[in-house]
Image (tube, rainbow, N blue to C red; front, side, top):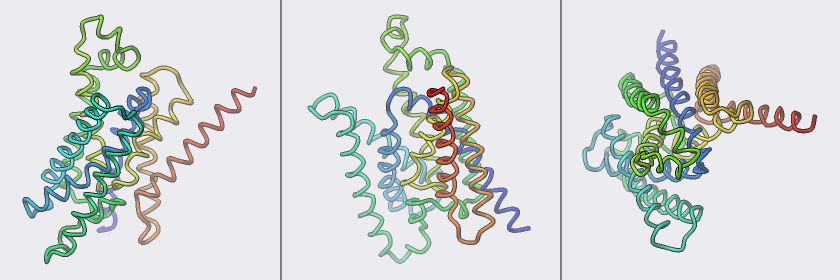
Length: 276
């Protein structure tokens, strides 16, 4: 019964994560911001550590807020580097990724030396530990995930026009700067809710891989988002189930392996179609 309950909790969290990250990953992929997800996930690590050091609690809401603020700070710094320095996008993202991750590792080592380090559990956020998720974690993921998907549905037409033609969107009177902030913020939230399940290192795969696979099957944005959400959900559930069958098998890496297999099949299908 305990094992069944644990699998239910892990599976529920994985389903939410796969659906949200798959849907939002399409916009990151189409806007050529795939590396942004990697940078944000790494930038969230020091936010988690600082939130713990300030509150001495593992509350999912507190840690999520810390990760969210750190992720946003990383985005703002990247934007500033793009605008006020000669650095290109990839260089700015790589710089933020390495600096924030290095700071996070330093803070993590400090926490591990504290008397309460065994109770902190922050080390699981590096590579993820879905088995340690609690009901409160899943509730937090469900609330944030529902809010993000609801906003995506509400502003669907705006995001669609902005993604494919920002200049045309601006000519229509749309507030492109606000849309940029909203879309980036939604991606940050999608990354934050997946850190405990998949971890800082692997989270970007859940954001990019479902979208990359779905892109090989359709050229319509609506269908692409639907397929990516389905692929993300299926991969997350499959990874959670497979990892439950083998003791000590981490869920996050298994989810990424399942995703990688789906991406490979999708690419092979597209290559065969192109050669025929």
